[in-house]
Length: 98
Image 1: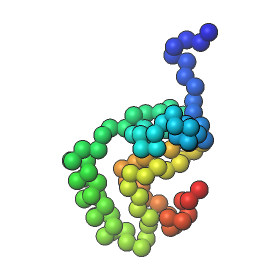
Image 2 (image 1 turned 90 degrees about the horizontal axis):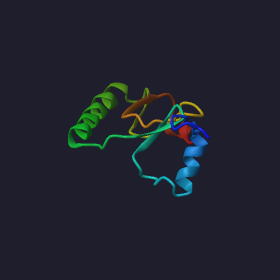
Image 3 (image 1 turned 135 degrees about the vertical axis):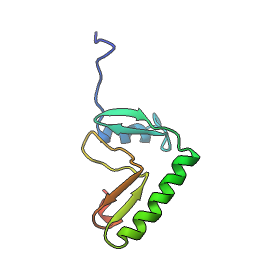
Image 4 (image 1 turned 120 degrees about the vertical axis):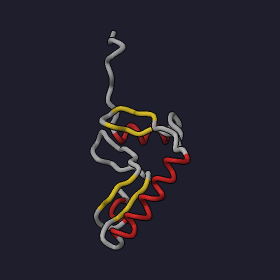
């Protein structure tokens, strides 16, 4: 028998299978960080307004030089797929299909 504190790390593949199987809803507010699922805070009015302001500023400053993603999943490793408020990437959106 294992202790209650023993944890099993989930991979990004496990996480996606949980969504496909209906264990997690596709729109459920969780993110996978270092193999652990974390509940994300609700997006309130102040949060949404701040993200909108950041979008405007960065879009103007980085137009045509970087890919901006807002509140989208970003796979960082086999164990992490957080959904940061803002991510600045290289290339085009097509580069991130897989």
